[in-house]
Length: 111
Image 1 (cartoon, rainbow, N blue to C red):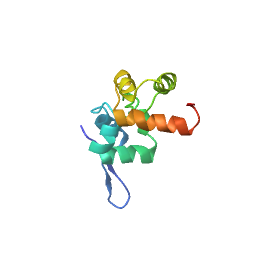
Image 2: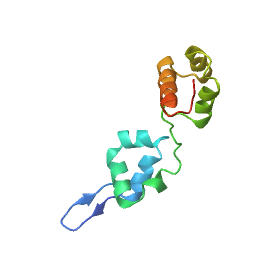
Image 3: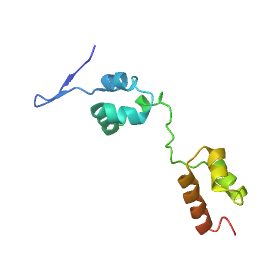
Image 4: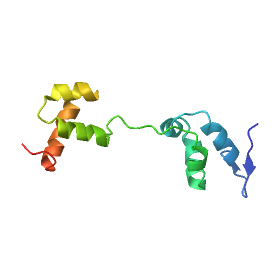
């Protein structure tokens, strides 16, 4: 059962703690919760419940995220081809090429 609170002035608050928690349980990722249930997510953030009601959700790692072990692999295999590194890391050719250029400019890799 969905509960609502009456506030001074006649406003009805739909997104109570219980309603937000019930809505959050439907989602596996915070991103999905934020996109598909904006009202509940916004109310939870404004009231300080967001982290608590989203504690069951799995952390969704962005695709563009580079892990330390992947960067170390690129540094150790800099002499190998970009195609080889892309295949080993399961990343795109252009992603590998871009990261290698970033590493080279940061002086992490020497020619």
